[in-house]
Amino acid sequence: MHEFAICEQLVATVLEELARMTPPKRLTCVRIAVGGMQQVVPESMEMAFDVLTQDTPAEGAKLEMRRTPVVLDCRKCGWHGEAKPNLIRCGGCSSGDVQVVSGKELYLESLEVEETPNAECRTQN
Ligand SMILES: [Zn+2]
Image (tube, rainbow, N blue to C red; front, side, top):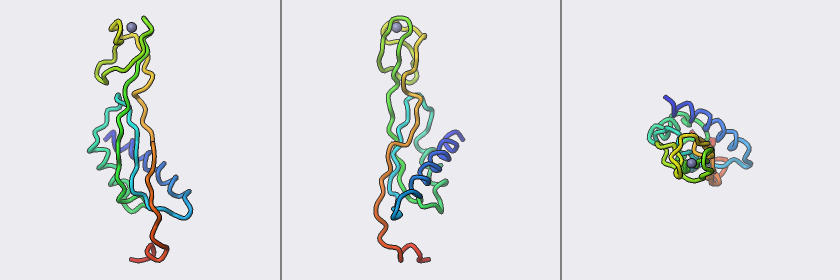
């Protein structure tokens, strides 16, 4: 599954970030930006995220996806603007000879964390 591979990298980055926080924080939410041309199913991303964060400090956090627009530059007429993800053509002259400025990206935007109540709580179980 495509989303699983994406999430694997994402979770690795998130865990690295968490490991750097002192004192340790509890992760509540992960926000990612996903370009309009990225073929990802939000439900599959969430499912993969849940599976991959099991038994890690990121377990139970919410995954929020923000779709970013597809932006093109036309090589023929110089048009620059937003396009539909399924129609990668110039909005001016309809040429297919365009450069994708953004829309393929997928990156971690922010992490939301909260203070862990206190150290004792973490050693229970
Ligand atoms: Zn054009």
